[in-house]
Length: 159
Image 1 (tube, rainbow, N blue to C red):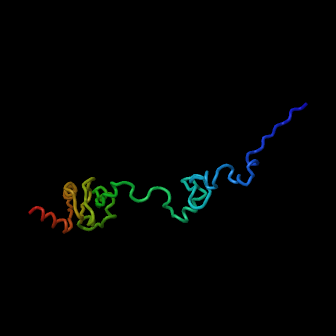
Image 2: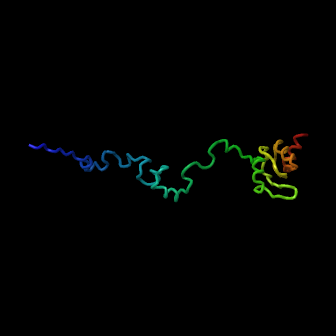
Image 3: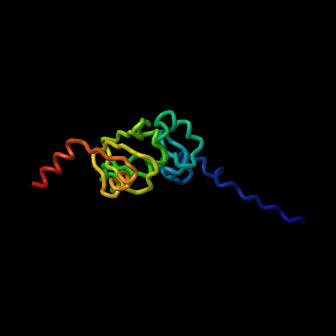
């Protein structure tokens, strides 16, 4: 007598009743977290959710992914405008123009710092400068002209 082949029914076929519409997951929204696609809105939109990237870029713009704005306390605190002589010397035409006297550079909002070598004669208008920057510029025959506000404050302190 041949052996009878046993056939196990699938679980889904046994879950057809009125209360079995969720297949054992209770409420219909259960077993769906933000990682699973499904539902409305932005659920399932991780970094690698390519199927919703077009939706994200259209609705929320390109700033949805990654870090934007101030990312540390240090950068938030430091609001001073400073520039090194190295940066000015590497690209002087960006900051000023060449005249018969030398390079005339207008950086009235900046403090000039002395890092770097000076090769050209520079005439810089600035808010403030370090001693080393003044020394390096004056050695090449240039000068740093400070704004009137800064010179008035310095004169007031000396008295």
